Image (cartoon, rainbow, N blue to C red; front, side, top):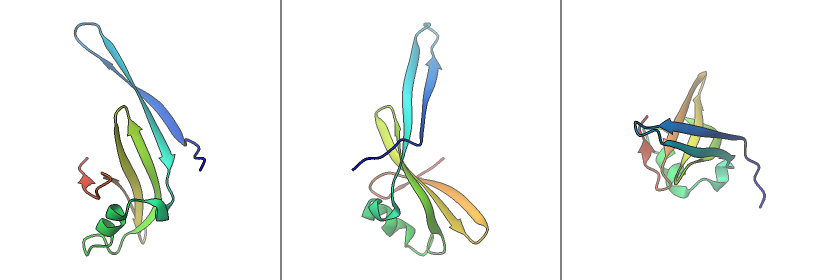
Length: 91
């Protein structure tokens, strides 16, 4: 299966000892039906039942990865972040 990266960017951190760290970040589109079952299960609970998934991405930030899910409810839009186990990531 071939996925094209929608976005790729680098985060640069400077430290007091003059070291610079560059972390490559990338977002890969994910089809709704290919999201981990734990995420769709979380979104089907009463808390989120009125929200519908619009788009989803697998985000890789260095060694870390999470799912960014854009959801809609009527005219409202929201972006949520999830671990692959379906836990919502704050922030």
